[in-house]
Image 1 (cartoon, rainbow, N blue to C red):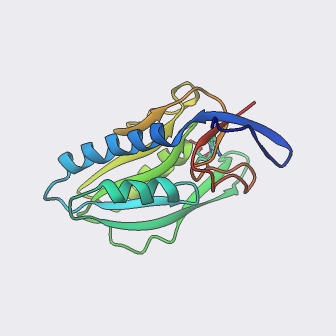
Image 2 (cartoon, rainbow, N blue to C red):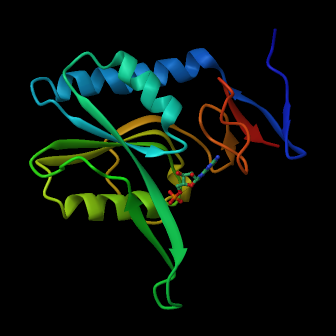
Amino acid sequence: MPQATISLHNKEFTPYLNEAELAAAVRQVAQRINQDYAGKTPLFIAVLNGSFMFAADLMKEVTIDCEISFIRVASYQGTSSTGEVKEILGLQDAVEGRHVVVLEDIVDTGHTMQMLLEQLGARNPASLEVATFLIKPDALQVPLNVKYQGLAIPNKFVVGYGLDYDGLGRNYRELYQAV
Ligand code: 5GP
C-alpha cells in the first residue's frame, strides 16, 4: 500500500523516501566506515535529538570495534555582532587522540556542523570526520568537508526518521517532505 500524506501541527507532508531507500543509504555509509576505520576503534559522536534513528541503524551495520556517545547542541542569542551562539552539551568522552566521526541527521546551512567541528577539533582528536544522513547541498552556506553523506536532497523541509516538525514526526520510518 502506498504511504499516505501525513499531517503534523496541521501542516501537510507527502511521502518522499521509503524505508528501503533510507536503509540503503545507511548501509552505504556503514560500509565505507567499516573499510576506512578498520583497526582504529572510532568514537562516534551522535548529535541529539535528530540523529537517534540514523545512529541506531548505522550502528547495526558497523562491524568493526567502535564506541558511541551522544551530545546536544545548545543555541542561544549572543550579542548582535556575534548572532546565534552554539555550544556542545554532554560530551563526557575524551576526544584527544581518538578517531572521531560526528553523526548528524541533516546538514542544512552547515553552521551547526561548522561549530561542532571547530569545538571538537580544538580537543585534538587523531582525526575528525562527519557522517550525515541527509545533506542539502543547495542550502550550504559555509565550506564544509562532509566525508560521509547518506543522501543529498533538495532544499525542502523534511520530517520523519528522527527529524521533527516542531517536536512531531520523529517516529516515522519513512521520510516526508513539506507540501
Ligand atoms: P544547519 O546548522 O546545518 O543549518 O542546521 C542543522 C539543523 O537544522 C539540523 O540538525 C536540524 O535540526 C535542522 N534542520 C535543517 N533542515 C531540516 C529539515 O529539512 N527538516 C528538519 N526536521 N530539520 C531540519
